[in-house]
Amino acid sequence: MDSTIEIQGRQLKLSNLEKILYPAAGFTKQQIIDYYVRIAPAMIPHLAARPLTRKRYPNGVDEEFFYEKNAPQHRPDWVKTVPIWSEGNRRMVHYILADDLPTLVWLANLAAIELHPSLSLAKDITCPTMMVFDLDPGPPANIVQCCQVALWLREIFEHFGLQSFPKTSGSKGLQIYVPLNTPTSYESAKPFAHALAQLLEHDHPEMVVSDMKKKVRTGKVFVDWSQNDEHKTTIAVYSLRARERPTVSTPVTWEEVERVFKKKDASLLVFEAGQTVKRVEKMGDLSAPLLVLKQRLPDLKKRAESAGSETQEPISIAAQAEEEAEPVRLFRRNSARKVSRSGRR
Image: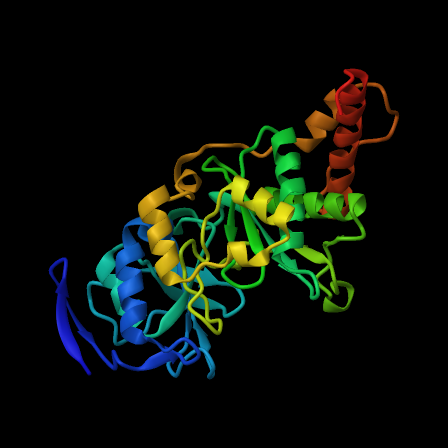
């Protein structure tokens, strides 16, 4: 079944609408398009002006897929693109900008089920507008353990005066975002993220790893700090995932994270397309602060030095996260002493 529709003055030809792309759920391409239309008011602001990588499943989520960065030549002339130099490919890549509903529907019609935007705006690809931590559980660990790690992360962020916002990955794990929206660079954000991941591993070695090697991740939560890179992308807020069922990467509240950890019930953080739409209708866009909240990463060296003369350990911040982690620990230790002296736990 094919049809031609008009959206916001744009003509789109939709094809194979009855094709089932989620066999286990009987979820069709038409239902995928319908989901993206309904979620678009909340989702498009998180995609707008960002280079977009698409993960396409033309024959469904059980079949072969491919990543697509370059815009296809057969695209409509109204689909916006932006040229960005690729060091790896030694050429310009023309990324799509999903700035409007017609573009989002056109992508869904191409079976671009998963959408992965950059952490940067296209106008300054070297400046991330947010920092992200991808909490990935190694079986038999699951999202319940991710919730515990997320709460530890939130505590660290609060320690630095930073607000953070959780969302499900739509797959096995949880992702924590720290909005920045201030001048920064990946050269600052990535080592800082690595330092915090190492700090968590240092403090909770029984549950946390910061190393990507799969052999060390069994039963633990991998805190993936490496997403904070100009050349990487993270699953978009509200994107469908190519799982057995049409689950969605869905913003959640910290209260929900706490409840899942308390009840040890991983199913409480699984949301399919229809549920996510209803959540947004009821709760609004829980990830909206990512777009506007302005925060600055702390100067670890300065904070460590200002911790005072209680320690004689040398302080040095280098590009390597292994070196940067030490001032974080130092700052935490000094702060812990202050809390201890105040009589508070």
